[in-house]
Image 1 (tube, rainbow over the protein chains, first blue to last red):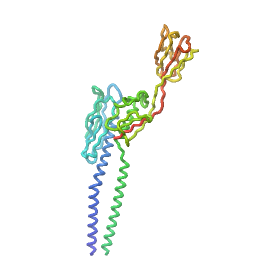
Image 2 (image 1 turned 120 degrees about the vertical axis):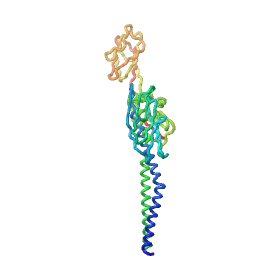
Image 3 (image 1 turned 180 degrees about the vertical axis):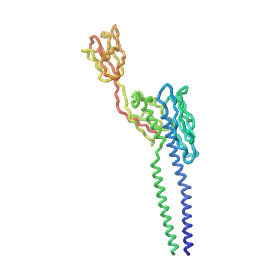
Image 4 (image 1 turned 45 degrees about the horizontal axis):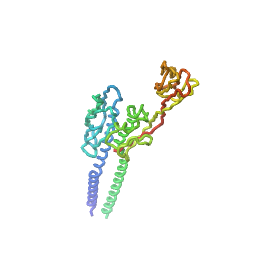
Length: 140
Length: 213
């Protein structure tokens, strides 16, 4: 065979190999890792948010109002997400189902009501005010 | 022939590169697995443990001091969050359990367990003075009606006085910070007066909270 054909075959082989490896990685391994990492980050973000909310609860006093800003990452796994409060737990909603998660909140008996939603990318504020039956926590 | 030798070398080189890449992926996977931490379980367990031994907990007198008479699961139930399996133990005894949190995260807190005891002494009253060996917030003084005691003093402060003679059982408040000496005026025979005081016994206790999602 002439050397040119030989070199051409080698070049083609290398290009095919690269194509095959890239397809394998991006088809199987990479999305799986992205979802798993996104899930871990979502878990930690939610745990941090829960800890911040629980730390913002004031001690037993006559009247108290608390307003505190909470930090959250702007996106998880490349998408925006929302955190909302329901039934004494926090739920993180994300387009990818493996990243969505929830965690219960540990609240004292003085807290009567918990509500509100945070959207990622906007300033997240937790506001605790005196309600008629007890303290109310609102996510704004 | 040289062309084919080159192809063979290329094929071997590509195989080597593939092997190295696979080893890299396996190492990364192992590193990722060890970095997984169950952050939400930890956050819940830490928050619950801190609430249990905190100031406004239903089972504590002050921060980090558990009151042994308040350690019941109905008292803890309002602050335990729903939605997870939880077990709370104090010194190994299960205080509260819901579900079976196998393989969950455990958080420990060291606290003090305080138990009130009740100790009664019938003083031998050659001199009508009794010093309580342990501090106690209150004491119950029982005086027989025919004993003729009119005044009872605690550390020179009058706590009971009846001009016609003290009779029956009376609770008196004592100083929490000083050792108290009770004085009964008048002549008293042994057995006519008894003092019950309530010292607190404190021991260290380990509170463990296990949460499984």
